[in-house]
Each structure stands twice: as structure tokens, then as C-alpha cells.
Image (cartoon, rainbow, N blue to C red; front, side):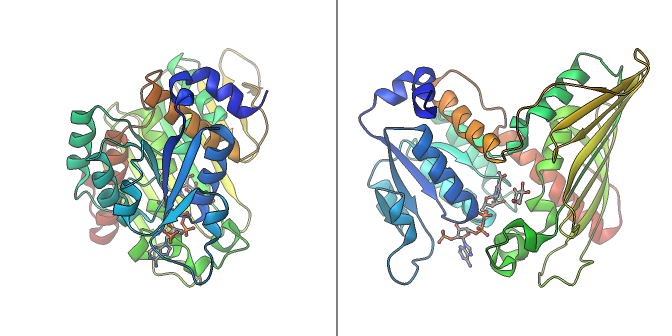
Length: 349
Ligand SMILES: NC(=O)C1=CN([C@@H]2O[C@H](COP(=O)(O)OP(=O)(O)OC[C@H]3O[C@@H](n4cnc5c(N)ncnc54)[C@H](OP(=O)(O)O)[C@@H]3O)[C@@H](O)[C@H]2O)C=CC1
Ligand SMILES: O=C1CO[C@H](CO)[C@@H](O)[C@@H]1O
């Protein structure tokens, strides 16, 4: 079945609109991906792309959108119903507040911002206007991580004691066809750095183990990359539940790694998000057993799931799996980690 047909069976009201006015803010790496996914999943989407910078000559974004605009007032003149904010993190909140004030449903890319200013105002506007606010921590749609979370909730490894998450990949390999030095990831002023850019891991350990009570962190630039941000950070987390946690993020490993481990009173779960595998080793079985059967390693799947979920939330079929409050909580952890790395102190949250 065509993906758009399947989607229309789920979100009938949205698909009945003659033209669903859809705005994408920012046409960088993730903005392009969202534009393709919106086009394939929402047949009646009329797409507007809002860019901060006008490239010389004709704008390549006009090949995928009904129109490209360079000013938010122009974007608002087309009365967008939903928007995906995929600009650099320091620009997310100002744009989100302007759109929220016009009743636009919002999917804001992670991290929600690079500072707390304006976040509570955004959350209040969305609550008052009863509009959707979803944050793009896509690993919540990872099938292996959903398996891990379910197994822990079902007590398959007993009571959770500890959780470790690791992600690392050499920044120039993230997008081999682009100059890494121009990416938001490489630049402090655009919300870059391992802590903000790889904050997916912070989000998912919190999704699994609950709120963080305190942390100690280090953050450094260890490589020779031409960046003005940290490329390596370690977080030692204590959760309110008593669980102990550790998160490692880096932008230097030549062989990409995205994996983790949860330790419980009755066993251990291990996951590898590169191969999509989860294994459990519990006192109830003699050896390590594969858990779940996760289809494919196509990276685009979780981005499609994110857009489908956004539509489901707007249609009223679901509540955001990653709320504005979740995005705020992750940012608080990142900011506390930065402070701890500077002062050497343990920080209470
Ligand atoms: N959920 C996920 O898995 C992912 C999330 N992201 C997040 O999406 C956001 C965008 O990231 P990504 O697409 O990788 O970014 P890119 O490095 O590809 O940069 C593209 C975006 O930044 C804008 N931009 C770049 N340089 C400047 C500048 N000097 N001044 C103003 N704007 C500039 C671009 O401009 P323009 O507006 O003109 O198009 C575009 O919006 C970030 O918050 C990132 O963390 C990114 C990748 C994956
Ligand atoms: O959000 C992110 C930024 O891009 C990276 C490389 O594609 C991803 O790993 C990460 O999830």
C-alpha cells in the first residue's frame, strides 16, 4: 500500500482538507528529510519552506515546495496549520512562539533550544490554545529501544539498577557530502556540540529510567576537528528512582557506535542501534537471548514514524510521546552538564 494511502486511513480528517498548509522552517540536512517525508506521507500537504538565508540563484528548496519564503510574516500569510521547526536550536523558540500564537501545531526538532529562555512561555501558549507540541527526539521511535523499555517495564531483568548509553561518530562522516565545519553541529553559535546535538541519548535514558536527580559531567574537545564546541562528554547521572546512569557522547569515533546496557537485579539487557539488535541475559535463561525482531536498519523509518505520530496527535488519536516538558527536561540536563564540566561540581536538578 502507498504510504500516503495508509496514512490517510489513520488521519482521515486531515486528509479530507483540500490543502493541508504545512510549513517547514529550515532547509538543512533534517529539513530536507522532513520535506521528502511530508511529501510522501501527506498527499494533500501544500508545503511552504521558510529559510533564514536566501541562496544565490534559484533556491533548490523550491523544487520540493509550493513556495519558499524568507520572512516569517510571509509564512504566516499562508495560514499554516502545522509546522516542523528544523532550524538551528538557538532559533527554535522564537519561531515556535510566533507560530504557536497563531494556533499552529508544532513539531520542534531536538534540542528544544540551547537555553531555557522562552520555553515556559511556549509551553503555556500551546497548552492554552490546545495545540500539539512534539519534540523530535526520534530515538523514541526506535524499535530496539521500545523493546528495551517494554522489557524493563515488564520486569524481565528484575528491578532496574543501572543504565549506560553510548553514541559516537566522527563528525565529518555524519554527512560526507557536506563540509562539517559549516554544520550546526560544529558551531557553538548555532547550538552545536556533542551534548546538544547528541542529546538523544540523554532523552532516552530519561524516558527509560525517569527523572534525573543529580549529575556530574566532563566535556572536552579532544580531536583536531575545526570546531568551537565539545566533541566528547561523559555524564554520571543519579535518577530520582535510585537508578545509576552513565551517558557517553562523542563526535570522534571513526567506527560509529550507538549502543547501551541496562542492568537489573535479575539480568542484563544490551542493545546495538547500529545493527538494531537487543539481547537479554537473565537468571531465568542459561545464555544470552535475542529479544524482538526489528525490521531493517533504514534510518528514515524513525523520521517517518515521527511525522506519522505528529499527524496522529493533531488528529486527536495520540498524545505526544515527547512533550515540550520532556524537551525542557533534556535541555536542563545538558545545561547542568555544561555547568558541572566548567565547575567540577555535582549539580542537583
Ligand atoms: N531528530 C534528529 O534525529 C535530528 C535532528 N536535527 C536537529 O535539527 C536542527 C537542524 O539541524 P541540521 O538540519 O542538521 O542542520 P544543518 O547543519 O544541515 O544546517 C541547516 C540549518 O541551519 C540553517 N543555518 C545554517 N547556518 C546558518 C547560519 N549561519 N545562520 C542562520 N542559519 C543557518 C540552515 O539555513 P536555512 O534556514 O537557510 O535553510 C538550516 O536551517 C538542529 O536542531 C539539529 O539538532 C538534525 C539532524 C537529525
Ligand atoms: O540528531 C542527530 C544529528 O545528526 C546525527 C548524524 O546524522 C544524528 O546521529 C543525531 O541523531
